[in-house]
Amino acid sequence: MAWKFDQAVIRGELDNTVPGRVQVRLEIVGRTEPMLLDLTGDAWRDIAGSRLRFSNPKPKRQFKIPPSSEVQIGWVGDITASQKVKLFTVPEEEWRQAHRENRIDSVPTEMRNSLYLEWYTAEYGRCVIESADFEMEVIEHVWQMDEDEESAQKLSNMHAMREYLAGIIQRPAKCEDDELEDELRQEDFTEEKWEEQLKASDRLNDASMEAHDKYMEDEDSERKIAFVMGWDHIIEDMADEQEGVLPSDDDPPEKKRRREWMEAMNEAAHAIENGEIEDDEDEEGDDDLIEDDEEVEDSDDEAADEDDEDDDLFGEIDRHPLQKQSRKFLMGVFEEMRNAGLDDPREEEPGHPLDVFVSNVMQISGKLAGALGMMSRRRTSGIDIETGHVLAITKRCLNWTNEALSALNAMHELPEYADHHAILDRWQAELYCLRDGITDVRRELQGG
Image (cartoon, rainbow, N blue to C red; front, side, top):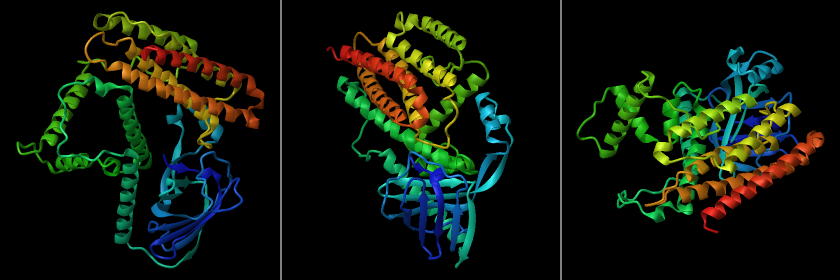
């Protein structure tokens, strides 16, 4: 994911007075030397040809900042001082309270200009500084960019984003000899094969999240997201729909398959809207954060009822003790955070150890639920698809456990948690216990 550290910027200067070159100087909280950028390309029309100074009235430390001590050589992304952002018009405590009460949509907002400074380097990938709070001043203007030059620069920026995301996705090269195998083979479902698929899925998800984060508020978001993601087939389909192109027998097989799939999805969505098909929620996941014990009990009862309905298909299903343990631990973490006053949002500090800890514990609980549920449905004959998948998931859970433990160690070193060491120690002990349970499951599946 992109480096974002606007809160840590104290002040800076951007110089695009030389066409085709942008130089930037940034002073960062906690660093004695400034961060220097030397970038190929130009800013948007509003500040192209200019020298811009900006300062942050309330700089704060951040945990995720590129560790560069030398001049970063790279190329520009989108650079503008007129990026539109939606901001709350009420005091911070008021919108935070609305967030806690799940009524954030009712808080009034307004659109304001913000500085958007994006660049790419071979060492650190994509970096973004975006803020509507900076005080900005154009102190020199040397040349003027016209509309055609700006359009060309924006297109170049989209190509830069596309190349950057392609590096994240790492799509395998297509070979003409590649054919889909009709026959399933056991060697295609080992832990290693599943891990390859999971890593590919992670990369695609990371790239998609980054594309949506950048373009989701854009008027042409669908087309731009499809372009930077390399989904040229979607752009082609959108163009066909816009131009009224009808299906043809001469269409390539891949295009026919896409249309058949879209028709099937549209029919299913239409059936759900008309109540012909129930829109079942995922019984195994932990996507919704449950706020109190009564709701937890209700959800467990509902999940148990759903499991009973599946008995005819899969036989009797029991929730694995480790699944219950991980869920209980997650709910306990949320409760202790509320009681200790540790649950306030920390948007100002991306990468904060507490956020890292919580996100990893949530990953463990959610993924264990799915993996252990799959383990209870393992086939007794034929190709064993499930065991390799469960081993791959539980290996990841071990990694998340270690990351959560590292985050707890980092919290121990922070002065703001000096009064909460007892809670941190308790979480650490429970994580060790959870890790031992995951190791036992893996040993059992491996026949050890």
